[in-house]
Amino acid sequence: MLDRRFLREHADEAKRRLAQRGTALDLDRVIGLAEELRVQRGALDTLRAERNQMNDEAARLRQKGADAAAAIAAMRALSAKIKALEEETRRLDEAVTAALLELPNLPHASVPAGAADAENREERRWGAPPAFAFTPRDHVDIGEGLGILDFKRAARLAGTRFALTQGAGARLERALINFMLDLHTSEHGYRETFTPFIVNSASLTGTGQLPKFEDDLFKLRDSDYYLIPTAEVPVTNIHREEIIPYEQLPISYAAYSACFRREAGSYGKDTRGLIRQHQFNKVELVKLVDPQTSYDELERLTGHAEAVLRRLGLHYRVVTLCAGDLGFAAAKTYDLEVWFPAQQRFREISSCSNFEDFQARRANIRAKGGPYPKPVFVHTLNGSGLAVGRTFAALLENYQQENGDVLLPAALIPYMGGLERITAAP
Image 1 (cartoon, helix red, strand yellow):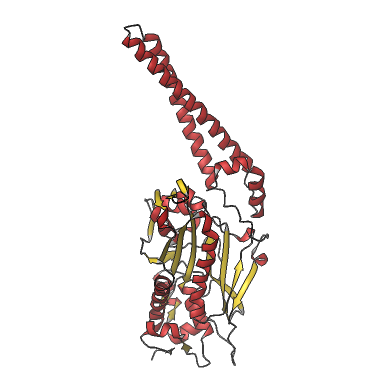
Image 2 (cartoon, helix red, strand yellow; image 1 turned 180 degrees about the horizontal axis):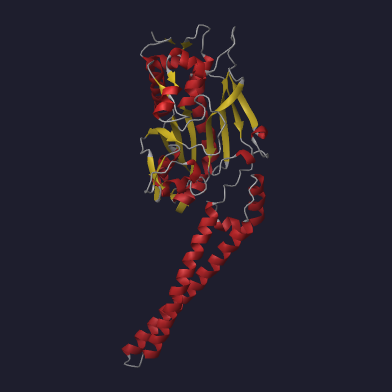
């Protein structure tokens, strides 16, 4: 959520930065409502002060044995006026909050201009594409040929955009999760956490999925419960409505979760394979940090996600998303894109974002101490470290052999019980 005072005092800057995202919302209306609310709250405080004075006067008259009836009647009349104004203020506050919840975050000054992903800025590449003496196959053909991926049975169990892994495939998925968690906790300093896969609407509002993106969520019928679209939601909300002692910052969490997305609006996109599923596994990295160091922390978090790809020997690049391609809550995002030989293109495998105080303001997560004698909103960050299904798919394509086997990178062999190559099941 954007700061009301910032919008009021820097309206032109806010309009300019929101325009970079292509946002067509009426910011003047939001600012006008917020200003009306501010003025009305001031008037309400004045009336309450007057009522307190009247109460003191009535008490003084009673102590003197004088007639206080007129003072009491005036105080009651003022109380009725205050009650009506309080209700009006409550409704106005709800309207301002609802309007603010629809506004996306402001892009950071370092975010490139642009309207779509074609205008994202490449920052760096690592590794090189594998060279094949044959035409590389995609991960669907490879996985089905090895008997480790089964989309037909998954469709029978649930529907389209679901996957079933078996044998060495199921073990590979588990190996990836364990490898990522071990790397982030033992070498990168994250604290492992395991959260519910179901959250309430307050949690989703805190991280920015609600109210704007409700159509992309799976909601449990007749309840306030939703399946999580990412572990970012429950992990960030661990500290909702809390004031964190400053000395505990930065707080760094690593979490495995299953993720559930309706993929509303993506019909016809990536319908083949593991790229865009209704259910998938992911290891998520979340940081709550000092506002003064959040962009240093973003570089650090992005490097931690990159470390997974490097250990796995996967060719990738890092791009900075342009303003028009930013997620709703992000101020700046790096996408890590891994090479898929069959498609001859890079595909996103992780997004690492700094939300500044946008989520913390919605979830009321603050810190106090050190340079902050009064509570301040922390900055929140998150990144996939990594999306497991897409990593699985990238491994199959990049390590495929002409005979259909798939070699395993050295980092995964201990997690696969010493298995170095996946071959077709007998």
